[in-house]
Each structure stands twice: as structure tokens, then as C-alpha cells.
Length: 507
Image (cartoon, rainbow, N blue to C red):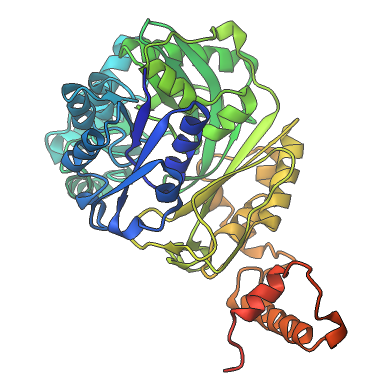
């Protein structure tokens, strides 16, 4: 049985995995780069080790260093989280070779589903509907042109080893194809060291809907229903929810069965996600499989009451699934917002810096998966996501109302965040009605710009300065209280404490 797990990741997901491990009585080992010495996951783990410089290529992506750390601390298993090496078949195979349990998919499944062309072939053979397109790599511009004419414009060129929106080009007419073909190959080589590309028919304004699957080592596979992930910016998800507002029971049942079939086709084990593109008539097509835990997995956990990390560990231990498909049902509605250190008013540029003050929301049906704290310096080297804010409520209307409240309650100063931008999204009529697709943010750009929040200055430095001045005045007034109150032993308030350590006499 697994007794110690090395978490081969950082930040929020490292904390998320470690919390479940602690509940299960499993010891944890944190790895960290030189830039992450003060990250919360380092302090939370039972043991921690630095594995390299700030650059992820020299630390979190260094397989030899991670394996060495696991052996040094006698870890039985490695949990890769998401991102970094979580979908690296070589890493999974290396863990097996070294006698370390990889808490993830079998390396063959990672390899097959990581290559989009191979994945398409496997899904076609399994009877899973796929978007019309090529089943082999495009070998030349001339072949791409001929294929596009046969499929019919508009089309998409995609990197076979792609992910995160990289290596994707949309072509609406033949004159755009040559430039798109060349640039897609260049970006694919730069991002994945693999210039293989293929072509698909472009489905205009689709929904991006994914099905969570869970499989054990004994051939049992279930789906944990769908997540609606269509609120995206440049192919990066911003807000997710479950159940999907467009889903019918009939289509949900069909897609769930297809997702299970897809997982069985690659002999899957552990937690994974089958992603679909769905058109306005609820026709659905296989997009890809993510052979790892997804960022947005908490909303599935909230509506099902299942800890997916614990289930991953149990599967890795060889335990059979403890439930069957008929045992599972969705309860209520959950929404997740990704809180990022970025300036939404200036092209969503990352905004690293020191968090000066932070107030996280709380209350019924509220969950914050985070790794940040007051005084933490956000590094420049990694993804800008600071936390995932999740709410659960009895229905979608109540969930939106709750998310509005907690986004207002969430305060972070010292750096700009996307909190105000997220609050605006929840005010857009199309979102409230559930009438949105992957082009939602682009379609509603003007609407978002015109929305004015009551407290637009909530994250500005002006507000922070005013708060500091008020705190210092409070401190001075308390310092000048009559001597009769000298023995007042009441706890020092946060305002007074902030005033003490704020040197405003120099202003």
C-alpha cells in the first residue's frame, strides 16, 4: 500500500493533492524550484527538496531530478498533478522502470492519446464520433490545400502533439492557408519539438464539453458526468460549470456512454477526461483525451461528493472502483472561476509581485483551492493562476448568485488580478441565461467593456494606500489613549497591526 507520495508539481494543485493525502494518512514530499522556496506547498508537505533553478525546464520538467528525489525520500509513488510531466509518457514509463507507482494513466494510454492523429484513429475504430478531418499527418502545403477543398472551408490546422491552444490555426479561405500552414508548423516545433500537423473541419461557435472518467485496473470504467468549459480566452478556460446548461438527459446519457467506450478503447486507468465539441443542435464530436486530472475537477467533486485525488490513489493501489455507474448522480450546480495574477485591462499580461493583503471568501458552498498568502511573492516563471474559486448551490441561479457574492468578497492587493473581469462575465445576460459558446468572450467584448461595477477601484493601489493611511491613524489614536486605559489587554486588531508596520511618517 502507498504510504508516501512525492507530488511532482507546485502551487495550487500540489496543495490540493497533499490535502487528500493527509486525510488518508499518507506522507507527502514536496519538490520546489529555487523560485518556489516560499510557496505554501513546501511548508505543508512532510518533507521537501529543491530540485533545481527557477526555470521549469531545469526543475519541474527534470525527470532525473524528480526520480532521484523520490528515491532519496523513499516515496512509494509520484502524483504528477496537471501540467508539467502529468502527460509525459516517458516519465510514466520511467517511474515503472524505477519501481515507483505513477498515480496516473498507463504510459501507453498517455502516448496514444497524446498524439492527436493516433487518438483520432483509435476513436474512429472504437465507434466514437470525431470531427471530419485527416487521419494521417499533412505532408505538404499542396496536400493541405487539397484536403481543405475536400472537407470544405472553414477548417482548422492543429498540432498533433498540441495542447493549450498552441499550434492551432483557423483558415476560412484558400488564400489564408499557406501562411497558416507554415506558422502552425513553426509554433508546433517551438512548443512541442514536433512539427506534425493535421486538419479538421471547423465547427463554428461550438460548446466545449468534457466528461470525467474514472477507471480501475480491473476493467471497470465509469463516467462522472459533464463539465461545460466554453468560457475561454485564446483556447484557455476561464470559467467552468456543471451540469452544462445546454445538456439534455438523452444526450448526457449518450455522451457518457461514448466517454466510457473511449476510455476502454485505450485500456485506461485512473482519472481522465474525454473532451467533445458540441454544436448548436447537440451533435457531438471527440476532440481529445486528457490523461490526467483536470484543473476544473473540483466542480465534479462538488456535485458528486467524490474526492478524485483519493480515487486516483486507490486505483494506483490496485483497488477496484467502489461504485458503479447506476450509483452516481449529480446533485445541485457548481461553478469554478480561475483567479489569475493578470491585468485584464492591458491584454491580460501577467502581473507578478508581492501579495500585500488578501481576504478569501467563505460561507456555505464555497471552496478556495489556493497556495497564496499575504506576503507571498508571485514568481514570474510559471502560470499566472493563483487559485480556483468554486461554489456549489442547489441550482444554477443560486450558484451564480453565490459566485457573484464570493467574487466581491475575494480581495487581493499588491498586484492586479482578474477578479473584476470575472465579476463582469457573471453579469452578461448570455451567461446568466446559459446561452454561450466558445466565442462568448469575443462576442461579448463590448458588453463586458460597458459593464460598470459599483466598486471599480477595489484592486487599485489607491485603495490600498487609503487603507494603509486609515490603519496608521487608527494606530496613532490608540497610542494616545489616556493612561487609564493602559492596562487594556484586548487583542490588537489587524488594522492596528498593519498601522504599526506601515511607515507613513515618511509620506
